[in-house]
Length: 128
Ligand SMILES: [Zn+2]
Image 1: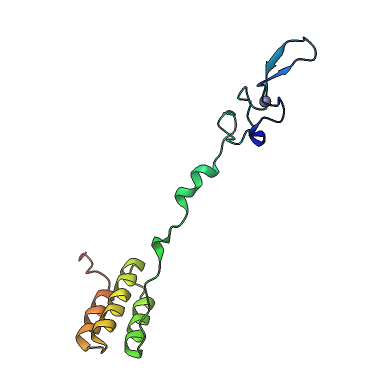
Image 2: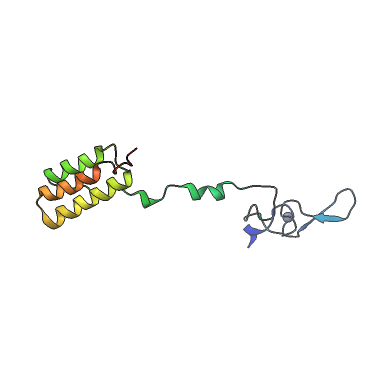
């Protein structure tokens, strides 16, 4: 595997010292004789912060729920989205419920819209 051979020492792991005549460990591959493909493994002075960055990447978990198709359900879903007292998580959950309800019942009912709207209101605050 010529491509993996250290280009500085040619895989000898050592380079001749032009002044003393003795050989020294190759500074490029640190004596491994291989091209530094696994960069950072031999060279501990290099930090690779990019390695740790992935933890904060937004995952696909934040996927938006589906959206209803018929007018009454869309209106209700819009109400949910527009709510200012509601957590995003709750909104997503409610819209999912709306979509589910639309799929299973096809018709909006007052009972259902009441249930949804009830959950849009802020949680009963502690009376102080
Ligand atoms: Zn080398």
